[in-house]
Length: 500
Image (cartoon, rainbow, N blue to C red):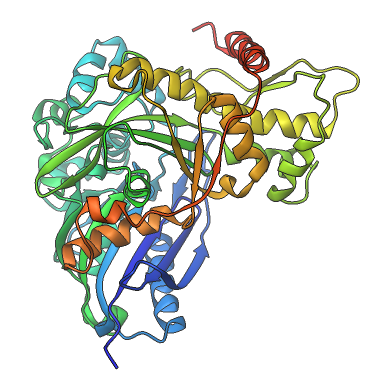
């Protein structure tokens, strides 16, 4: 019998670490998942223990291998995908973090970002990195650690400290400290990387006083990053693919052609539009980012981030107590009174793209004495659909090539299991919504990149031929009704935006 050839995908997320073993046809064989603690030491601060990230990742990898009864020799490659922007700084000799990881959601550097913007650095940051000055990204998080851990900046200048996003930290640990590297997609989320030249930007490093000696090497998404320590997983395994979670989902959805659009609905929502080998500068407060880099060629995307998507459903469950589990939201929303137009603007932590209003706070509009749990559920799910429409219209405006072409949205993430929500999304967008057969697209993308470099899997165009549709949701809402709903949403957003 021929030996099995499998790929181990590590999906290190914000609230849990997962590992999925795929066979050489990219079918899942076994998986494991483990949650870890979230730390909130102050208002707006979010941290993770570095050891929790590592230990949970190693644990799920071992569990997945055990469940598949697989030996290390049967695994051709490891692919890593990760929560982006989350920032770690560690000692190169010991591998120990000098501070907890500062999570992408963390807002502690808001004042520093506002000062940089006021000093007129916004244009430089956007021109070089495609990003906006925002606490979301890694740059000001690194600077905060260097400023607040005694002696850290001096140690960094001496080359004693290493910075990395989560992928880089895991790679360091997996290789026993032999490899300090990242991929182009994660680098592009640091606010320190020139996405046009493909390298760390000295002017931006100087702006934040970050020593270049801290930074990892930047490689293609599909590349040999090193081999795991034999004692960790029962034998050395080559690490051959890395991409940030949203870019990995873009790859997993086979969005390789310019104009293809994917949206991932988890705690937040992240929509990426492939713009090919040209980085598009947004006029609508979207981000330009590297979608993937293969064989030295960078492919770009416009990205829009919605802070609250699945989190709105969690609010219904945990905050209001009107549903017992997330899957109850769709059936409850379906029973809402169609005569009531209730809008939730879920600016619980501000509004993301295209508004980028950190000071806005959540609000509801259109409440009557007859408004109840059903209408609240519909408003929460509608808010995700309306926010996606805002992103889609901004993308169309920024990228004229999309004008006139039919938009088809490929979706993934926990929320897409709800048929009601996906139909509502198609209705609000007035565009088809395609749900794939394999919903674990983030891990799938990481596995594909690793398998591509290992020679197990075909080039992107052939991989795209393997993508399979589970169901297409086609718009069915009358256009006049849709326009009225959208007008109500726009009015609600206008009323919610902060004066600043």
